[in-house]
Length: 377
Image (cartoon, rainbow, N blue to C red):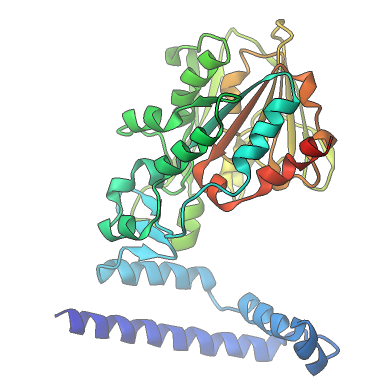
């Protein structure tokens, strides 16, 4: 039976690939591909000829999104549950990449160097992705292929941070509430409620009492968010996601938001970008999601300032900090060119919070690069 199934799968996939390839070739013939003027010399020297061919073919790929969607549907129908590194179920999508899991070399030493250089207290919250919390849903063979779980990666990193940094255990917090809607179904990031669950612990570590959940007014801004995992599969048996906005009525107000994009352009904006609900990436609703630098000023009168250095888990977390600080600045290493001191002086902040997803800590060296100028001073 398995041989028959495999044969049917091969025939369907090969036939579809041949059809798409033929249509794509026709598009290339009609539209043409811009080749480098030096022709063969480019091929022999820097490879630009080959890159032009590859780029042109990719750009001309007919109905690329429909192909991804069809691939997912065919695989699902034939019992295949992983497409483009994403594990598909009717309830949620999970990242199923089998890349070795280990914190990027130098991460711990870079953060420790920052803590030693500056006077303010330093906190670190490593956040598991949805695959880290719901790993038991993944096929068993994936766990045997992976060198470490996300929890092991976080534990190892925390052990290297020693006593100079105050570590926050977000993993066990999220694991305990995993029956709730704490992660998006179509993305590896947390929901507003997931961020709130960790906020309750983080803000106590920072020296404040958390705002009770029932004190917030929660607005369901959109119920049609389809995240990064969906974009890799176009698989929609699981429901699209809800993006919520949390507002605390009667408390401190936001008086100013200033952002700097990756090109260095500075502009004023709102805490939440409601217009993003109509855009291609609805997650940009959250504060600073597209910014290299994002500053929030509030009516809080305690003159306390917080520096947040984080990845794409941080924007959904920022709104919960508004009631506690007169000023919050967030830096996004992946969107910043240059070092940290080009954007902010950490000595101006009594506290710094590092907040990163486990996937970023394993795959990206942007945090290490951002902190490079610390050790050069």
